[in-house]
Length: 223
Image (tube, rainbow, N blue to C red):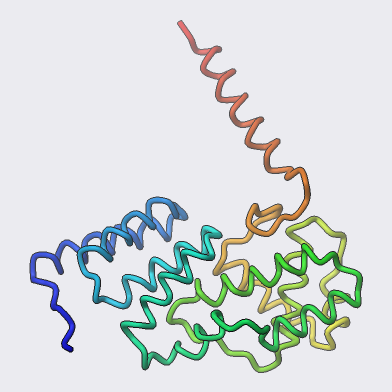
């Protein structure tokens, strides 16, 4: 059965919404980006990129379940995509080589299971957020080490990059490059709420301090 075509007016409107969504995405306004992409998907429900953009925004905001649903829509509309193999792995029940290596090495090194879980979540979200960009895995150990190191840094663990590289038997330079890829694509920051596993996140205090400062400034300037 042929796909129902989107009329010209709707295509124009969908394009405008998509561009607004991409601008919001680049500005790290994920809530706004998701709203734009959801509107686009209703106007142009047969455009695969619409659902890929939506999946990326949802993954970047840490909403994994909805990201997978959007990704399933993308795969339905573009079943022969070169990305199919990468995305199909996300629906598999078992772990891929990167996750297996990460779990084995990090567990042996005594890393708590909840932090290992956060690293696996980071890997899942990275593969979605990467979108149409190619994912090259020459050595699973390199990506596993980068995920391990990144999630430890997020959780404020005292760790040196060379130590993690040695743990996984890979070069420090290769791990550094993959670590930077994770930071760039996912916009990871210290104590990132998506991957921080502690009971009290230090960022909460910064938010409280900023709110207090705003209130004090308002009171100070009150006529």
